[in-house]
Image (cartoon, rainbow, N blue to C red; front, side, top):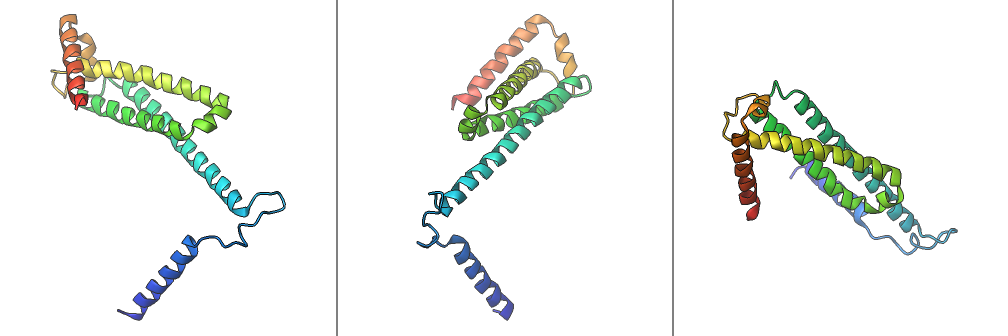
Length: 176
């Protein structure tokens, strides 16, 4: 090994020891306010992680809403394939937002205004997703290059069959 390699290994070991060392007894003694400095660090880390998750959660909610609004507004220009990709992206975004809510449970209990705004946002996403799913299910059996707006002009008997076929497909996909 070269001298540079040995210096790099020595530096990484000392840095790792410094980062992952256990606090000594002198750093964990109680401060004048009665809380240990380590407890301050833990609380600060919790706040930073909560704010980070809150930011990502907001971003996922807004992204899902923006994807759905833009896709539904442009459904006359989108093919069925592009529309189904839009639905998948919005579904993934809203699912990611819902997963972050578990980590934000305590925060949202104490901040009711933010909680109510989130409820309105996710209900809007739910309504738009429902419409987009209906359009996607009605397009089963049609060419994937057909405009998404064409599925709204189908006869009722075709629509009922496609909805049943779509529901059966969803059950089969999620059965296992």
